Image (cartoon, rainbow, N blue to C red; front, side):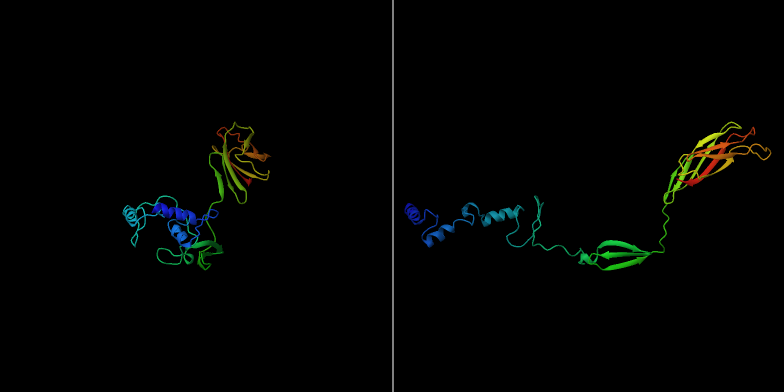
Length: 227
């Protein structure tokens, strides 16, 4: 019987298009395949098979329930899915998060995601942030980075009645700097010829002279200017 049916089908199929001449045979044949022409019996899963996969946690339940277990692979966003617009407390996210902050004098202005704003005020606009760079040491310097004003200091020991060139730890930008000298040891009150003197030599050099008393062992110096 099956051979007869197959023979009839072969006779009713158009060899040019592959379509059955009889709509009844064509519909019956189409019911055996999916839209891609695959045999349905080779691709579908029975209810028993789906229930077994559900129990194993690899597919969603046939009716209701939740799916548990680790999700593997890549989850992609559906173009039709709505984006999250509320936080865990049910509040609109765009009306609670802060997207920008700006200041105006003593006022600090916060802008929410939806464009609304709120403000707080500070006591003043002054800060105690240091703008100085410092090089510590026996011979060192400190510089205000905003103005260039620089203070330098150091100690000098040399024989009596000699002149010695002192190289600053940091070079000044010009020779308009000022220097102050003091004895490191000894007193010149009773000796008229032991005063310390200085003269500018270069932006980074000052020449110190004097100090002829026997107890004199050196001096301390401090210089101010711009660098």
